[in-house]
Picture 1 (cartoon, rainbow, N blue to C red):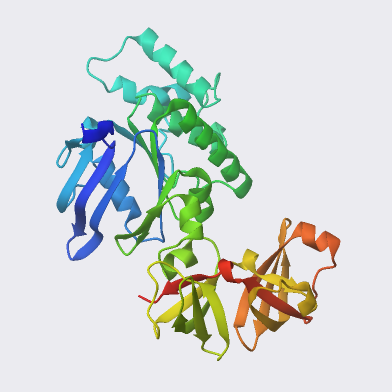
Picture 2 (spheres, one colour):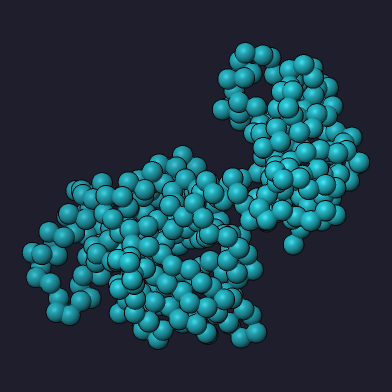
Length: 374
């Protein structure tokens, strides 16, 4: 046990690299997964997140470095000897077995095999857990996508794994069912206290379900943090662009003060922004990231806050109604094209802006993230 009473991480990677011939799929991975945590790997296709998951499962072995499970090095240990189970993207249910047969499959592979009565009891309990009680005799083709996903979950959970690995398990579901299953997975994980590790390319899925998120790019870990930390304090432009939407305005630092910067944009406009830590040097190339929901729109400058970092005239190029928000695509001589999100409640109090309409746009100094170019 580590000193200070801290528990051993249930999963730990130490300087892990995975190569497939000349291709490096994962490089220099160092991270840990805490017991009872819901951790997600997020990134585009080909970034190495599924390879990382498969190394936890034992389906792939690292080319270098060490994989630890509960403090023990498991390099070379096959998947069936690891205290983990995996739910695959396409569920991999056996079509020749009914629901009970699919769920019981893992138990029946054990040596010695549990008594038949115990298997029936465990199957019934696990199906109740995923809200499929009474479905024992159903076949997979007789069930909806959401029900099939629950069967796959039950089959993984019945073995009481220390870690449940989820490889894009919601990708095949429609949007509403996917949202319902996100809530269901969260509730299930909290109720059972099992460590969940999810792989997804869907940022909404990762942010809404996870305690922490690992952002990956080209086989490397870019940033690890809570969903809020990644959204509010991205490490670089890649994270700011991948997690949520951002407007990016390029410029150079003209002056550095104690708690603020003056930045000269490419258009020549000068604006103030809160100074990040560490502060960039004068002359450094930076990107200023402003989330669309942080943009403030008004028909006249008097409707904007007096302490705005920058106020510009803009014209509405396009308007998309999204229910809770309206998304505006705007164009400005100073900023080029940028997005703004206006809450529905605001537009109930004042009529929406029309395509082609001219307006004033601004944001507060604290709303802009200064990201140094890498």
